[in-house]
Amino acid sequence: MSPQVLIAGGGIGGLAAALACARAGCEVRLYEREPVFGEVGAGLQLGPNAVRVLQGWGLGDALARVGARPEMLTARSALTGERLAGLPLGDGFQQRYGAPYVTVHRADLHALLLQAVQQQPGVRLNLNAAVAAVSTSATGVQLRTTDDLQVEGDALVGADGLWSRVRGEWFADGEARPTGHVAYRALVPQTGLPEALRSQEVTAWLGPGLHAVSYPVCGGEALNLVVIAQGRVAGDPRDWDHHAVAGDLQALLTPACAPLRDLAQAAPHWRLWMLNDRPPVSGPGEMARGRVALLGDAAHPMRPYLAQGAGMALEDAAELGRELAMTDTGVLDVPAALHRYALNRWQRVARVQARSRRNGQVFHATGPLRMARDLALRWRGEQLMDLPWLYGRSEMLRF
Image: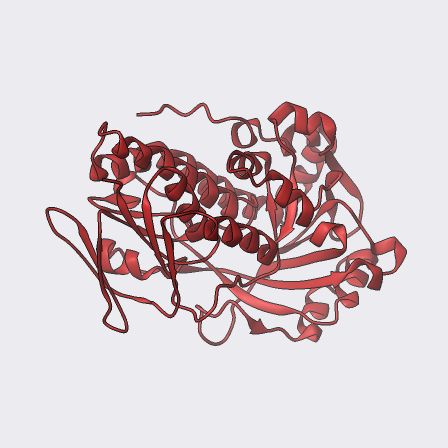
């Protein structure tokens, strides 16, 4: 019989897992704690490694309709506006990696995944169903929801985000911790911007103690803006949508160059959230134990300085589907499949987590380190910004 897979969480990672598992021949039941499916946030970047996953699921055309294809990844000084380096993202980049670099609104990616999942037979989606408890037996895994619904399956996938209840119940290794950084975000229609501020590029503005990123979403019709700086947010750290005071952001950007200040001022509304993460994954046991596996932010929350949070969740889902497909043929049992999933993922995601942390130090550098960073970017920026180990087809040892 087909494996019965329970999935906690209906965000991008959970829907991707549902799609991959259904395509692998599993029966899938997904449980989302909110009353409706939706996605918090604005834009995200998808490197070719993530886009290839979506293309493999037949979603390349749907992504092309809602995403944008930036022409360039540009690094600038936040203080002077000087262009430090650039990485072309056009045809040559796409030919090199077999897929384009795409920027997309989170809600658009979520919607296309939801539609794809709804078209799969053998998938049941449940709303208003938050995880309350997890247990296992010799033959399966049991999940209890907060409204006392009891369900059993062959595997449970915790794709319930940074504050994963599945992780807390089954892995019991503490909560994510504040990074000491906060992120301001805004979304602006391109038509509402002065011509000089409109852009079809990904631009990273690097400054002492902060950096900003802008890139097109919604087919290029809107510009996503993010400013990340050192600081804390009053209130619940689990809230991804604090109100931001525009005056605080303007004060933060006082030393910045005029184009960056003008771009921030052009956004009428800003939201704010605190960045939290965990140390890089140290072994496969942090991603799967017995009949329970973690995926995406539940397994390896990472700082946004490599723009790979969504990409790693999509890769996780694809690998999970590959391994569970082997159970349908009798090659593996479910715990062995989940263990192989973790073996084939933990080193890669740990590397991305560690590189993201290092990038944060480089992006926010001060003093001599900042000068060395800018010099290195001017000298060999394209080589530093291109990441074959990340964007290329995986050459990981597969167990």
